[in-house]
Length: 107
Ligand SMILES: N[C@@H](CCC(=O)N[C@@H](CS)C(=O)NCC(=O)O)C(=O)O
Ligand code: FES
Image (cartoon, rainbow, N blue to C red; front, side, top):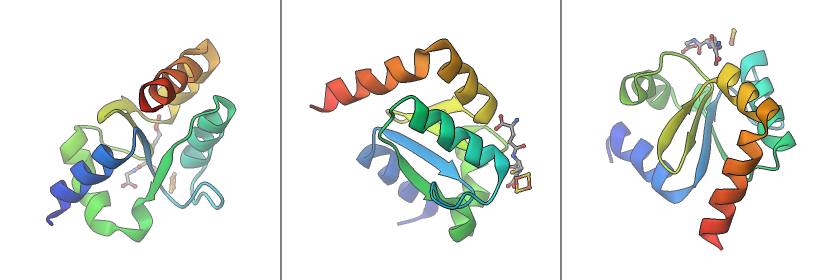
């Protein structure tokens, strides 16, 4: 599978995906840590991809998503944004609503 197919596969397999630096337990950057905290506070059940452990994905995703930086949050295959947007959505309550909608679709 080439890298774009791998990106598509992970997005098809998980409704909420955070491409980040490090892991939720051990974020390797403050921006990624802030996105994880917002998602956890919103009660989102998300799959994390550590781009520091996958240089191909780190290089390809900015082109795939047309978004230059990490973290990157996707919900149902669509780019939502980086940590600033994720935090704004958390504060407004929208992130919790989106996470609940996705959970409702899956069950
Ligand atoms: N304001 C951005 C901050 C993210 C950011 O600036 N990320 C940088 C530093 S971690 C980045 O991903 N640079 C490209 C790279 O490291 O591949 C957001 O809302 O997500
Ligand atoms: S790794 Fe340096 S700012 Fe994110």
